[in-house]
Length: 478
Image 1 (tube, rainbow, N blue to C red):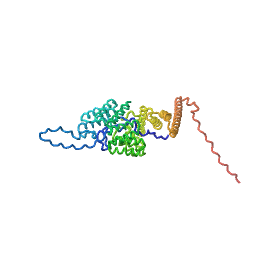
Image 2 (tube, helix red, strand yellow):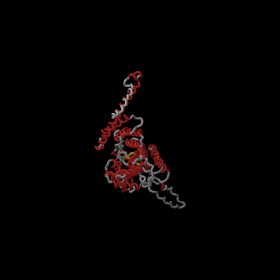
Image 3 (tube, rainbow, N blue to C red):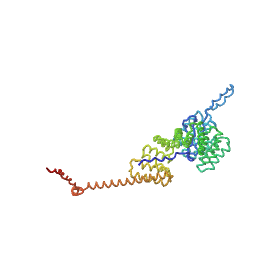
Image 4 (cartoon, rainbow, N blue to C red):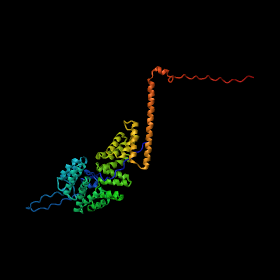
């Protein structure tokens, strides 16, 4: 039977409930990874700190009269943190922050205390307190995350990423009134600051209120023209409204400000997919995955397009990374199974599909692809008939639960019928083979005398050829 192609799961789209939020830990004026912790929130842009512009040279200290006590030494400008410069350019606080960010890539729980240490090394380090909260949330410690977000806001009350992440954390904890109060209080106290409008847009995105998202994101960018988070939200809402060229423009503007923003590359990849340009989408997803290796959504989308282009080994590596960083995702295991099957690693593919169904029993694509694997591929160590029967059962289960559209349903029914005939043919072949073996065994077990007396075993006498015909008679004499 001709192998049927796998049915790939649809490309992942931006989810309302499980997107990664990030904090840029250093200036991202070039497309290099920023050491940033992640936390699952409904808005990736909430956790992106603004890029820090270059620090101005320190002003010269005027000379003092001889008998006048010297003033206290000023803090070097490069170590100053303010609303424009959230990360010092030098000093132990910066070093501690960068080290904590590296730890957060693989061990967010271990990074929490390191971010707190960085925050305590200098004054007004609101971004470090926010990062401590983001790392705690990524590690599943909601109480600690809330405490550190509130400390960040006590340090800088209008800080948009902390407002947004705190509001979303409270929303997910079924504390919607508290979340709304956090945002409304920020808007009341700082109506002409970007941060509260960013938080309001983020909360509206979570509630699928696109009109409010657009209004508040525009205000966030109006009050801070370098707000990549605001531009990213604008791109997301324009894409949701099918205004794809406008979405692309907004996202490319965001990347003009912050080329290393992995989330902007991820969202731009989705826009390119919607525009039908898979090659540009592949480039965007690759950049997002390279800049943030722990961003599972980027890895999955990158892998899906790689697999479609025929790069099975590279796709499998991307899927493995996605599964590592999102171990509870059944869809990540589904994609991994597809990659492994394309590499002809059938036993590993079987395990990946089974894991996908264990994590998400409703993931019908995994059941379908597992059925195809059993029917079309020789899984090592499995009897062919048993394998075919398991495959047929999986396809019938998919047929009953998925209720596919008419054209797909018709092809599926044909495939199920062909597989059922293949099974029946194999059963009959085995029955004939078994019958022949029994007959051979019975014949071999008979004693020699019985074999000789058995007319069925006696050899017939050779046939005797008739004598040759006489030559024709000669003619009479004259």
